[in-house]
Image 1 (spheres, rainbow, N blue to C red):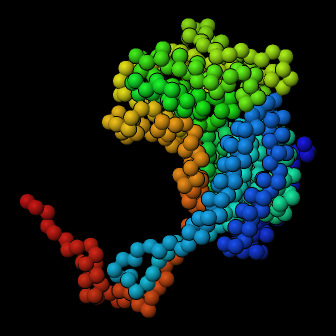
Image 2 (image 1 turned 90 degrees about the horizontal axis):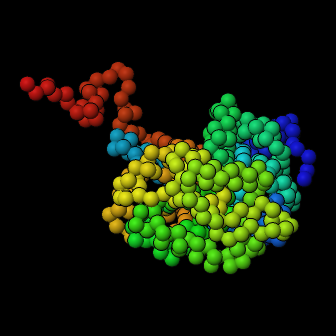
Image 3 (image 1 turned 90 degrees about the vertical axis):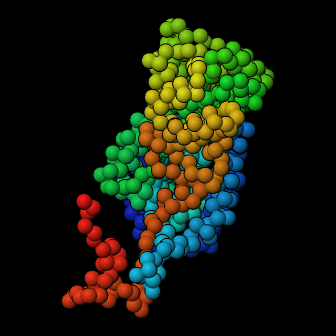
Length: 479
């Protein structure tokens, strides 16, 4: 891995990028598409090296998961942005009041300048490159700070992007928490951070010193609510996929399940069968990902042991592989039934292959349980699109919602992606991402005349008539 970047070097990079942006001016459609095409070609050319790096950083990371959940998502996002960019860049006409009708008004979306991106370790490719693609589509330059917990991947991204872009367009800085803190304090034109709520608060505090607008993609405890009678193969397929992809190290993974009390045992049996079908070789499967670090592995084991000591029912599906190099941090898929509300397992975002299960009696009880906790990044419902589903959607507030699926909303490029409250601020993907990294500049073009333009001192009857037409004649209050 390259040496850590200094505050001086980062400030110099920002100065050079801003100077290049001001010198060259906003890029046109052709140049933006060319930059996106360069990024796409670089990803495909470095595909195998990126998969190798991610797997080495994790100990074992399913190469299929990296292909599907990282590289395919990046290419898909680039293609979407390139295809829709002309429409995104088009001036947007706005309404002009009758009095100003000889004039016209429009909104023009112009690049902000230099965008900073702070990416996490759990999806180190897609959560670095999709924001980069969005920044380039919006006409910006970008500086990237990938995670120090995936050093091989971060170094591979730096090499890849250095081949594709000069540093005045795209630059990658490497380093630990100190570098991250200095990065978040730079006077960017916009800063996008993906990570924990705790670190997100620090990033927002640092950015506020320079009044840098932020997009915060955080996390939280995303619930999966299973309607009565729906502990079926289809439901558990969706929940197991969302919970065990990347070994649960996913910000929108279902963090806990709410299951009707009549369906608890059916849910447990179906979950176990589905896990065994997904991973017939158990946790030793090459498609089962390991935990990123010893610290996270120990934390997850501690959450389960605490719940077990306090009376929760713990069900492990499969056995931890023994003496397999690189697989020492494998954590088997685990259900924890009816852990107490005060258990750390029910208080912290889990970020691992552990699924707490709680029971409920009515949909209103499930809604109340969700609403008594911080607003989650995602909410999942499994059941018919009936009155209960509609009530759940109307009475809860979350980031995005998946009905009879998990994770899939993130791959829908035309949907905004973002949290609310403790789970995030702002959104990107789709046109929302383009606009988040653009300045919406309102423009009013004066015609040859307009009625208010005739109203000037000394005011007279014409002004009185205009005021009366606009505000209405005053009326005495009714007795």
